[in-house]
Length: 217
Image 1 (cartoon, rainbow, N blue to C red):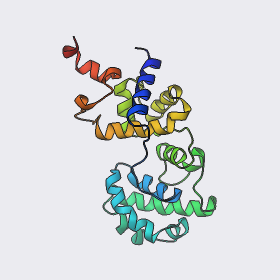
Image 2: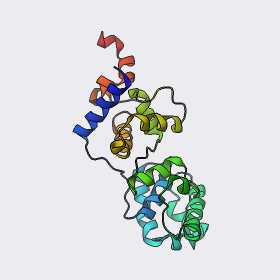
Image 3: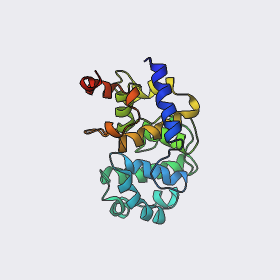
């Protein structure tokens, strides 16, 4: 099976079994999503969704978050991983939005990564989810699943994986494919104990073929 056939098989599977896929973060507007994605770094979406309702209620706009201080915001997110850094990032992000972007969430990756707490992965999430651009955000799930399936080859960094994925996935599916791979990694292709017996992608999966060679012969 060549790479083109592998990508087609994986995409066709998801189109059939999960035609719509979206972030599990709960939000109502671009600013809220940006806050949630910053908080979600190395933290579960479930935990973030428990915290954000109070954050969104009391810091509903970039202006309100920009005007607060560390000691006021920190208690809201203390249960999130790395709360010290994220508190500083959120305030700095909001201040930059107000001062440099007229309190609007930027539409380009190049502008988004200027914001405190926003790396390329977060920026790609925003432009794909909010602005429907063909951007592939590579987190740990996407990185792991794409490598196991054989969609990426010898990609040592998220940036390298992103480059390979967008090269082979049709633009119309790139934004959705990000969520396909994340959700597959979160619920089926787990890091330590992948649920291969429940996976519909084993026919295309290099990991499955390698680790089940004896039973396949």
